[in-house]
Length: 201
Image (tube, rainbow, N blue to C red):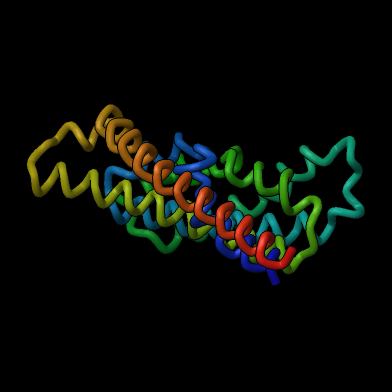
């Protein structure tokens, strides 16, 4: 039960953006607009869940020496499906803005990190849960960053926040806040575990 809870909460507590600092290229490039950020986040979520599923499913038959090329083939196939689907259903102006970054999901560090660190060594159920958790963590991060940038640019009138420099500025502040909260949570959990261990000793 503990592993299920840790896996389910992993994407929120050990957020792939704010804690692991992965996937920053699409995060900064697409997060100047909340709609674009949401589409990118959902696309990443889908690829992350499905790649975790297939890599975990075939983990025992994928040779160790060619595991990275196999991961690339699986992820690239899923990204192609997502890209073709979005090209068909999305309004042309939205797809033209984010289409290039959808293709770059193939080399997104979040997806490769979870494939190598989790899906390749865990059962399918846990890997699916990890994919959902990390995907939601990425979706939350990119939408939160986009919402703040769009608010500062359109409501406050600070147009610099639509630029890359503004994106990095907001991200830096958010990283500082999130990691401060993260350290406090980890410290509190460690203290609680120590107290429970002492009570049962």
